[in-house]
Structures are given as structure tokens and as C-alpha cells.
Length: 454
Image 1 (cartoon, rainbow, N blue to C red):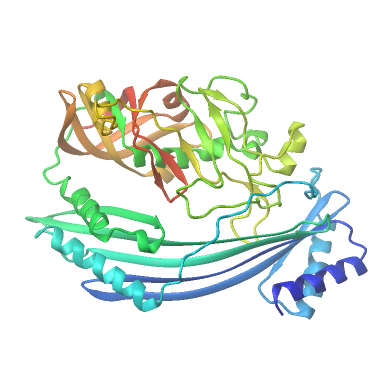
Image 2 (cartoon, one colour):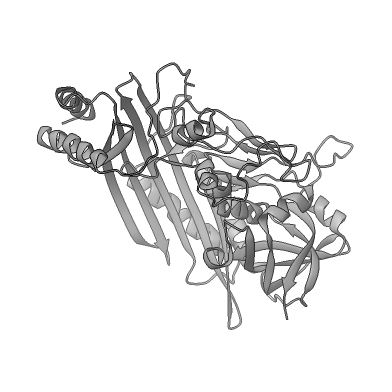
């Protein structure tokens, strides 16, 4: 059966069972990916997936059931399972379905032409070749990856909602390995967006430069340092602590931002935005996991927490409205909360007489004078606590000497607290960049951070 046929069957069954409040959430997608190692195809994958979740509300309790088998018999079983699951819920929390009445944005027409497997393979081989050509020290272990995927999201409920979004994107990365004597250094660069806009030479250059920049890295003494976090490093920290902006976590007592709306939580020049249709993100959405219309919002504005992120349940509990941030990581997931494109707004940067912005993060180096430039952090799963905000992370980067980027350094640990970090930011760069296409930040200067080195 098609999705439309299955939807009609489920609707009939739910009506026959006198289920008044229900919802169907459907996803389908396909992806092709290729990985290159030693100028040969190391891995090639073609995947297709689809799934549907039926959620019904009985006496205020939500029951879920999901399937990948779209048959008439499975439609009957799906509704019955969800009904029985709702009856077994003991929680006192009331679940809700969204009503009609929202105004939904229209996504721009997708003009992408789906690449063939051969085209993806040729692109990946070309990227691999570019990395080897960048530097004679590039060695075996260097890898290139290229992928293209499409996804459809659909939501239908008994209140009359019938919505659909379709997204597609290409993704590639270069992982360069360089040899310097017996030592090996790796570097990474990735790109998401439209395949035809990928600059393979630039991706190769950045991945190789990332690897070679660590050659000869030394150590640093322990102490307090002025630190510039690179844009991607700060974006990684924001991704790690994004859950603290969730009203669900706050209402469970797992976020220190609970009850802080309207209060200052960051430096007065810090604004953090959640934008489901951010211009440079190819994965744009018009509705969330409950069918609420999505919209751009300043979660933090001028250092003030303006709102937490809500779905229908948390908004009702707080006496407000959903912010359109209900999420379903997969079709079978229960409704949670997540941002879309979540980023710290960049600073404006200084201007030259010709009107161009001064390159970043050089402007921050000049303000720092002496300190550290942190370009990579690791150990996030064990070294970062989203509840307390504390972190202690293995890092690498560069010295900042006399206002400029100096020698590479490695094997030091940066320790602090995310909530304190937000308040003690001293300057933002103008070099906004993203990790995972979803979390973004410019480079950030913090005047004092604890560092454990040699």
C-alpha cells in the first residue's frame, strides 16, 4: 500500500474503534554513500527506509505503535496496539494533539538533480586525489566520503492537519592523514549542502592544512589562560549543552535554566537563535514533530533568556504555547524537544577602509595578546555534564603570542562551566560556522579558563 492508502485504512479503523484523537507520523527516505581509501572504493551503500507511527490519545494518555509494513492487516494491528498501550499508561501527564489554524511557510522548490552512484563515486575519488596532491606527506589512511540523501516527513491527525515536507542534501568529508617521520597527524573538513556547489580543492586544502598544522606540536604549562575557542569548537560545545534549553529537561529538574526566562544568562552581546529555515541549511522544516508551524526565534537575546524550547505538553504545563520544537528523531520515537538550526549570532568584526570585514579569528587574537587558541576538543561523552554545565576536555590548538596565532600545542585539558562561559564571553568573531549542519557559532574569546598541561 502507498502512504495515502495506508492513511485511509488507519482512519477508517480508528473511526470504527471510536478513537477521536489520533495522529499518523510518516517518514520515507533513501540515501547513497561512497567511501574511498587508497584510490579505491572502500564502501558503497544504497539504503531505503520508511516507517509510520500511530499515536492515539485515550483519556489524556498517549499510546504509540509503529511499523514499516504498510498493509491493511498491519493497519488494524497498529491501531489496536497503540490503543492498548494508551490504556496501560500510568503517568498523570496529559498528552495533546495540535489543532488546525497555523500558517505554514512554503519551502523553496528543490531543483537538485539526484546524482547517480557513479557521479558520487567520481566526486569522492576526485576529493581523494586532491588531498594527496596537496602535500607530499599525505599518506595511507587518508579517506574521502560522499553521500546524497532525500527524506520526506508527513503528519496527519484527527484535527484536520495533513502536512508534508521534503528535504535533500549532499554530504562529504575529507579525512587527511599526513606523516612526519614516525609521527602521524590527521585533519578533517566536511561540507553539507548542494553537491554541485562543493569545492573539492578547498575541502582537500582545509583537511590537509588541519593535519599539517599539528606537526611539531608542543605542550603548555598548567594555569589560567585567555582562550579563543574556534568557531567549530564553540559550536561543538553548544551542541553538547543544547539540551539545557529544553523545557522538558527543565521541567524534569535536569537543566539549570529552569525558571530563568527573563533573566540574564549570558554576556549582553550574546544572542542565540533557533531557525528551522536558516538560509544556508539545506534541511529546512515547516512543521515540527507534532504539526506545529515552525518559526525563527531568539532563545537568548542580548544575554537574556527569552524562552526555553517547548512542545505541546511542556507548553501546556508552563501555561504557554509551543515554540514549534517538538521532535521525533525517528518515526518510532516518542515526542521530545530539539532545536533545528541553533547558533550563536556572530559579532560584526572590524572594518577596513575598503569596507571588508577583518578576518577572524585574527581580530580576537589581537584582543587576546597572550593565550591559547583551542581548535579541537574531545572526550565530550565523559568530560561534559549537561546538567551541571561542568566540562573537562582534552584539547589541542595553538599558542596566541603577541596578538597572533603561534606554535601548535596539544595534550592539554580545558576545564570550566558552560553557564559561566556564556556569561564570561568577552568578544565574538564574525566567522560563523556549523557542525553537523545544525549547531553554529563564531570564534569566542573568554578571558580566563583553567588549563591543565605539562
